[in-house]
Length: 345
Image (cartoon, rainbow, N blue to C red; front, side, top):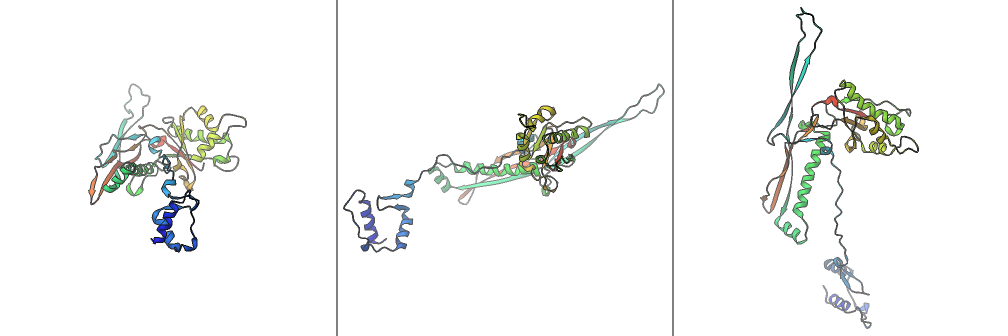
């Protein structure tokens, strides 16, 4: 820095209330580049009518951090979770027992009695590991402590969130490369075909409220009829747009009854309706899909033999690395005929 610039700054600092202060700008020979460089290096704002302030002195930092909003993960909220399998297993197998037979009216001398029997089937799914990690250096921890920022905790939360997001995606969509089956396209689920409404389309927002209620009742009835009354779903999930539509659309002008409230009141079987963003575009031709199912661990489970766990930090050079693992087999449905879906809503 030139001697002249140092002199000018000294004059400015003493000039706040000095009416005799006067600087002949003709005598100041400072290049613009030199002045700009000095401002940047000293991080200051100059006002010749007041004084010189540091930028950080004029900055207000809010106490609350506005963290980035993230998608709500609903897989483990809407589908029961099972952790009963040991964490070391590679395969989860269940057996199904089926009883068959018939009877007939007999006479005293009958000899050809019909037979009854049982047979068993085995079904197996593979367990896969989900992993992520985070790290920090000693210097980063010291810096974080000096600023009261919980760096290790925040990175640990980011690591868990990464595993949770992958687990949620596997619940809904599975992964064919690793043999993990997702809920949205699970094999054996009954399909209900939605009819066109008076407007000529199947979408809810083109139909009358009565037509939408009929569609909701019909997909439930499909499960009951397909299983001869053995099964009945208790949960309905929809894409968020259709959920909002039935939650806010009145059954008739002037009525306080919405499509959703009327359906829940009159259906008598469905106990809960919720939205799932993954249902948007999940149907045939990227159409929207709705599904009904029994929210019962005897019918469906998310198999997680090992819940999220972090291992002790391992030093690698100047860094400490923490690895985390969770083990899952995805979704397992025991009775697919108790489930149904419909596309084009």
